[in-house]
Amino acid sequence: MKIEIDEEVVNLLKEYGLNTYEAKAYYVLLLLGESAATSVARESKIPQQRIYDALKSLERKGLIQTKNTIPKKYVPLPVRKALTNRLRQMRLEFEIREDNLRKLIDELEKKIPETKSLLDKGSQIFVMEGKESIVNQAISMISSAESTIKIAGNKPLFILECKGNLSKYMRRNVELVAIGEFDQFCKDEIEKLGGKYCEASVYCQYLLIVDDKKLLIVYFDEKGVPNGLYTENEAIVKPYLMFFESKWKEVCS
Image 1 (tube, rainbow, N blue to C red):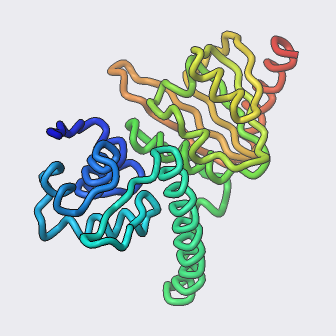
Image 2 (tube, rainbow, N blue to C red):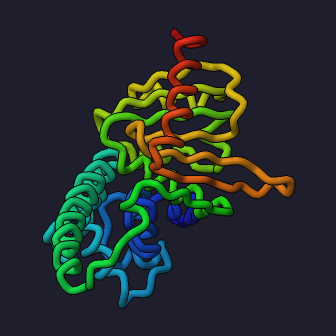
């Protein structure tokens, strides 16, 4: 059986934390069925000296099982079962890693001299330029939200090419409310997260308010470069919050 490796499938499998050899070995096993390591190496073109490490790792990651025959045979789990196993494993790995990193915060605080942070004062306005810095700020705000996320704008989930960041970073039980113009993808994502949206003209390109106290405003200059303003200054946040809530009451209630 001559196998052609589908590189697109290999790249998709790598999204689940597999390296190239592991992804190719699993893909080939799915096509071959129960097979010996030599067959998998031959069809996947993985060097013989690397195939056993790849197969051992696939077994550890829950994608294949081993039969103690002579020679040893490897059996692929069906895609859905295998990748569901892998997702559970990745979630546990992340939780362990997160717990360890949180413990390091206390240790680092003890070792690093205390400094006065402008962010702690809450009255500052921070200016940022460029898509990357603004998207990072938006992600930071979304992931820190404890109660509410309010978004307004013209296709606000797409304007900074950050679609999907809501579902990736938003915590459960956080209320999501959005006003603006949306395409179907945005509507589906908001509904999937249990949020509410209302289509209306809001005359702003991107507005993000988190927990009614953190504000990010984005606008584009004449060259099309996005610029952002971030603040926790209550005197600045409050008028935008009142604008959002009055617009929702006016158009969406």
